[in-house]
Length: 252
Image (cartoon, rainbow, N blue to C red):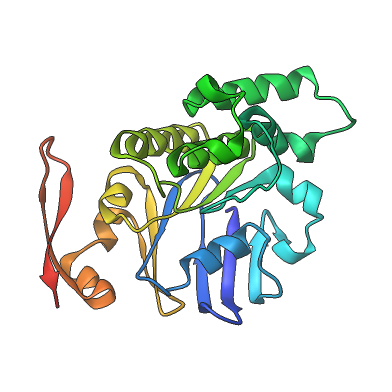
């Protein structure tokens, strides 16, 4: 396993969460507003302290990892990133290489990783632009490129589709799915249950700070669970290509 949590809690947003995550695959974290999703993502990324209970990554408590070593293993994509200085897009993506830096100048390995990340996130075309001038969706793709340039074994993302149009939502989720199939772990907070149903291998559903359900999306995302946790009536039917799709019918 990669992450293993037992009675994991935080001063707000999380209480008694227990779960194990695989070493590779795509794991979605879903739940209503205030369920603790972003809090959990922050703990998994070693950014929320002090937590209570246990959260172990690769056999070591997250709080005990040296930050540089942990950052080489686990990358994090926040919902938003605010920069006050005139960094170019390329410079922001190079920031993802910080855990690997051994000197003042970028190495050929750094350059290769950054160029690849810019290409696969469709951001190479504006690499020289001021990050502050970008739209919300463009910024989100650049932040993802920075996380991918880090070349982590595990990628934790807090709502990676925020601000993205439909085309780039699907492109990013396909990219993350490919990343997971390459033997990496992707953990993504999402509000879109259909994206989770389509792309995720496993899902954790949080409700009032606790793990309400976990398993494969087809096992977990039932009309009964959706009504209980999200207070929404839903039905599940085959979509255009035969895969299941959730249709929402109204509030309970």
